[in-house]
Amino acid sequence: MNIIPLCDFGGAKYFLFSENVPSLVYYSHVPLIIISFSIAILMLFKLKKELSARILSFIFISFGLWMFFSLLFWANNRGDIVMTSWALTLLVEPLIYIGSLYLVQTLIKGDDISFQQKVVISLLYLPIILSLPTKLTLSGFDISNCLSVEGPIALYYSYIIEGICIIWIIIYAIKQLTINTDNKSREKISLISIGIIIFLVTFSFGNMIGSFTNNWKLGEFGLIGMPIFVAFLAYTIVKFKVFNIAIIGRNVLILALLILIGSLITITDIYISRVIISITFIISIIFSIILIKATRKEVEHLNKISSLASELKSANSTLSEKVAEQTKEISRAYELEKKANRELEKLNETKDQFIMITQHNMRNPVISIEREIGIAIANIDKSGSGYTRKDLIIEKNLKNTEHYINNLKRMVDDFLNITTLKKGSQILNLSNESIEPIIENIINDFRIDMENMNITIDYPTETASWSDIRMDKSKIREAMTIIIENAIKYNVKDGKIIIKTEKDAKAFKIIIENTGVGIDQNEKEKIFERLFYRSKEARIANPRGMGVGLSVARAIVRAHHGDIDIHSDGENMGAKVVLTLPFDFMRDLEEELGVD
Image (cartoon, rainbow, N blue to C red):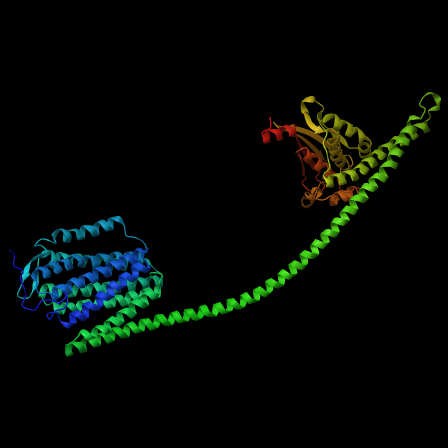
């Protein structure tokens, strides 16, 4: 049966309260245990997704556990409890240093440390775990002073790990201060590093005094580094918003201040009480200054926000008034526009009716004149000696008149085309035809106009240059007439007209070029956009035109699922009209719709 050694003082009540524990230990341990666990819980609940917040919580939990185990071996007189709690402090103590190293790098770098660094840190800590149950860590129990006898791992190796971590932090901080040139970043690095280094150095110093002198009461003064670290940390959180929640910093400061002051009731020794009260007073002053400074900044910030909010409210009010005013104006303008559109629609209807009446009233006299001229030409007797030079001149004049009457007839038909184009009443009478005979007839119709201007025209006559197209012959003739007539009217004296053809798998192109007045780039699209629009060059070259031809021609070609494009390099540079027609647009539509 194993006999548990007992020290020469009474047993602990609830494992923590004993006559053997100096009041200074309760003052140093109890507040810091509460502060450590409170901060850890606060950080985990508020910022559990942030790596640096989780690491900081780990440090405070480790430190809180260390102090709890330390309080256990202070209060208990049983050798087994003292040995167990002492071993647990040795297990937890290096974690505080490793966590601090990890925290410094993540706070400054803003990212996780490398895998290689994690391996190095783990290998450093591994001997502590492996040797914990052996005499290498704790070689025995000294009942005379109720303390454990530390082995080489506890006496030397644990402090080597602590020294490595502190030196690592110092070197890393110096390196980052050298790299960073921004003053704000350098201040943040300095505050974080100095606070952690002070905490770790004082903590190690206190433990080393206890380990090598067995004076653990004196060693308790090493815990003074934790409040300093908390102060540095709180100030850094408030000033630099390290964890994106500045209120944590104020909560930490207030909590630490209340616990430090409240813990004074545990001090019974008058002399020690004076020293502790003095230390607490100094710490309270430091904490209060930090709180006042941080709160003043927050108040200034809130006042600025309040001022901006007031200005924004005033601006919103003004903007709302302006928006309401503009909305009213827009509504009024919209109503006026609607009224104007209704009036324009009425005018358009009146115009269409006028055009149809005009076309009807003009067409009948023109047809009558055309018929009478035809009769007059037919009645000229060309046989025998009765056909004189005078008769020849009369016949020529009558034929010229007949030609101009045909032009007038086309103009009258243009009026009808305008109306039918607007009403969308064009109906196509489709058949497979070649455009070549259509062009030959049109050229023949305008022979006199070309002779008067001495214009030459060149077009392909070989059969291979032409193809049959499914089209409405009369409508395509009308469109080609408009294009060729324009090529003549807006040409120059002694000018040229060149007609070319191109074809691909699905479409046939007719390209008509002239050496005429050309078209300004700014007016090229307008001649298609509006009826009765004529370019400046066209108005100069032919003042009598109406500006409806090309709009009608494009409508006809597009009804065949083709298109018309006009190209010109500018004024007096001639023009090129490209007319594209599919070989069989009905078949193309059927293929597109999947109709058999």
